[in-house]
Image (tube, rainbow, N blue to C red):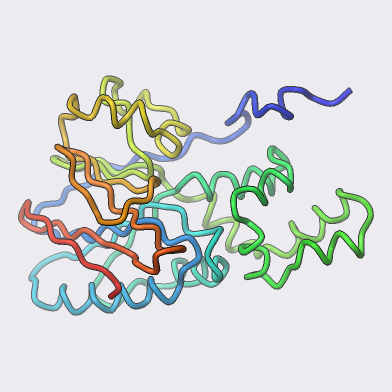
Length: 259
């Protein structure tokens, strides 16, 4: 009998390891938080050039914080992961956080999510970036398990190790960096991984309770937006062509884009 819990998405998060939460001293640090990339390598490289040029004018430590969702939808997910695994721009450090799409990619790899469900998240583009045409696989192999095996073997172990290593939140004295948001009324240590990468309304509706600025992505907006202490920098790069960063330096913010 088919597992109805899996069919209806019940028990989401079972068997996943809890991801790390980091604490960061941001004194004398210029932070560049970057929103959802979604396979848009050219946009990321262009934005990094703008960040490097901007940072050349600033003293002290410089840190790039990636807010997650590196894969799916855009054309170059595999290449984005290669880039993030490599060294950051000279003179910069980089911390990459997990988004929901990284977690769901691993859910597929680890057998917690079916291929059809994963494809519904935009992973056809991810597979093509690895040289895999899932429709062609369906013509060659009749068994879904064979298709799964081919796909799972095609993902480099270095990419999987990177995805598994990603922390899920950074807490600084005045700022929180996270993919989707938080529950303002719940202590950070008690927040679930699913909330941190999937939350929307429960975060937005209670944002007036925030005690720190929360820099996030996950929900695309036309322009980076600050609403009280909530700052959304996901500008939908995969459909708009615009990737946005927020520079925080000496407690002042400035937006940069790839264009």
